[in-house]
Amino acid sequence: MNDSAQFRPPKFLGPSHTPTHRMRCAVHGFIRFSDPERKIIDHPLFRRLRHIRQLALTELIYPGATHSRFEHSLGVMEIATRIFDRLAAENGVEMESIFAGVDALNEDPMARARQVCRLAGLLHDLGHCCFSHAAEKVISHHADHESLTALLLKEPAYLGQELDQLFFPGCADLTASLIKRQPNSPPQIQVLRDIVSGQVDADRSDYLLRDSLHCGVDYGRFDHLRLIECLTSWKDEDSGELVIGIKRDGIHSFEAMILARYQMNTQVYYHRLRRIYDYYLKEYFRTFDSTMFDTPDKILEWNDIKALNSLFVDAANPDAPGHLWAKRIVERQHHRDVFSLDEGDTSKGVKIAKRVSQRIQQKYPEVNFIEDLPDEPISIHKIARDNDREQQQIDFPILDRGKRTSLGDRSQIIKSLPPTFRIGYLFADVAQKELRDRIAAQCLVMRNEEM
Image (cartoon, rainbow, N blue to C red; front, side, top):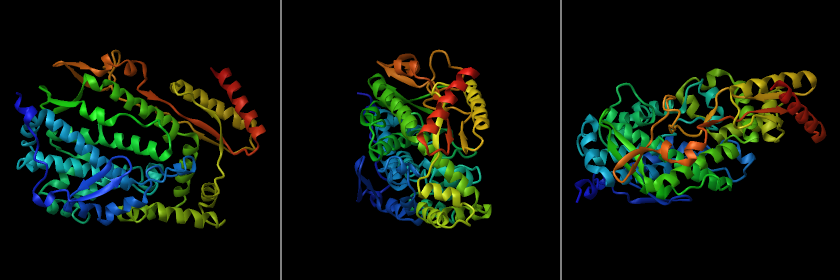
């Protein structure tokens, strides 16, 4: 019998790291954690995530979408652990050999790697500002939440010292490098990074399942347990890194995840009303003095509760700089869509839509319009297909009876589903349905003329 098939990783760093605590999760049942992990979960920086909603103002469209980054982060830790354990059961000897080459992991490599993987899943969203992605570019001055998360994990004044003391020396830097690639990150940990945020990752799996549940839709559901059970790994002979792939029995589960991602993006994350409220949030925060968010501490002072309080106060105060945007959000007085891109539109379609926007605004100068026509498409997957190996796609491997092939070559869904799509809208501040319908009809005529 193969030695690697018998190998089971040491589950914990030591007796004090036995998971004696549990928390009930709406998606995964009980999530278990240790005393040291509880200290991190109870830390003010992590407790803050209880008051940051996963989907910003999506509750204005899907009323159940009031869940938090806190519960999502616990879920990502749980799935990351399951994926790690599955890979270890498949190829534990190889994993241990590779991890032993990392300085911070060379003592008890499997237990330490597993712990870092759990912590990266737990803490990957630590740096989110209020309302998450909706206001991130304005509040964080075009930085991303991963950069702030890495800083919070590495700096002793935040969690750096605590992570190293609670777990092992070097834990903080290693965890940060899984979330945001750091200079000179050891290549051996790429597989851990892929577990937390890759093509078959814990982050995506949890938010699809969790967001679907709380929004009351079925789009995000897929058989994640089957998919995890079909994962495997091997050492790439060229790079020396561990590569994650799936067995052939997992193809349909993988396809279901890709379709779930596509449908959740089109029906929830880029819903037309979600887009307009995200726009209002950005414009509202642009009215703030930039010095209010010019340090990590100032960003961390804000959560959704404080931001909502600010919105309500400013909505009631006509003299507040952000009054009009706050009033639209609080009183749900939103623009209505009168034109949209087709999901298969190319950059040419965006240019046509912008010309339509210019023409319709000239025809109705008394109407306030808002353009939401992004130039860049939205990614569905990065799996290379037969004809796009040179487009920086990923040749995701399948193991079929000992032979490695490509998912893009085997999956009929991947072959037929484009890797990206476009969503964009033109909104008009028109309350009368008759006028709105007339503008929408004229936009379609103009589009046909421009094509």
